[in-house]
Length: 184
Image (cartoon, rainbow, N blue to C red; front, side, top):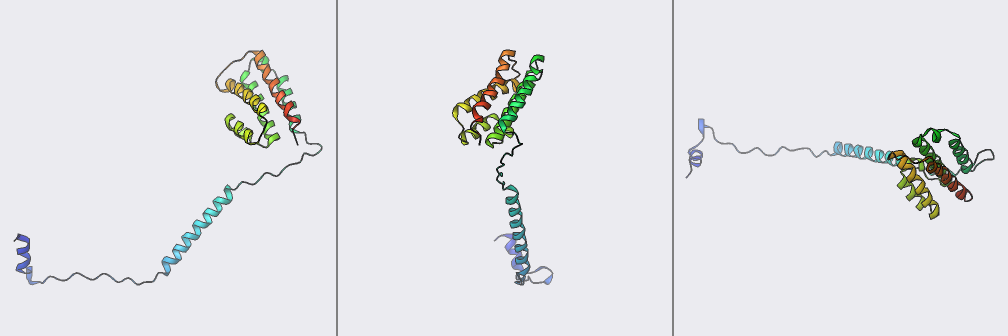
């Protein structure tokens, strides 16, 4: 036999006998506080999810009918393109500002004309949105070419010749000319 079992068999030390293990403590079965706190937490979570869904829900844009004194999208684009042509960015050699303004006018026109958030999208995302809007493929290709050329000047420090840069305004005007007849 092992030493431990021999010690236990000899009897208790100090003349005390070993006591039995205490039984488990009885817990009253009042579940009402747990139920109330569970319902409160669940209600809070439902309210939080409802608030999140409401905030996330996008309202549909209300179609705006142009009034008599409100210029149409192509008229605004023509005015802005004329202002860019009249500016001296091209003669001063500020190609980045010149191309940035052309791309901005074209994106603003697309945004007003087709109800696409063109100012907030990258060039690739804009072209995908235009495809989903079922805009004619020749227009999308021309817009892609124009925006790609403008992006090269804006982001890749490409410096085109003045004659090449003046073609950008003609391309933008062609896009507006070709798509204005499609306006509602």
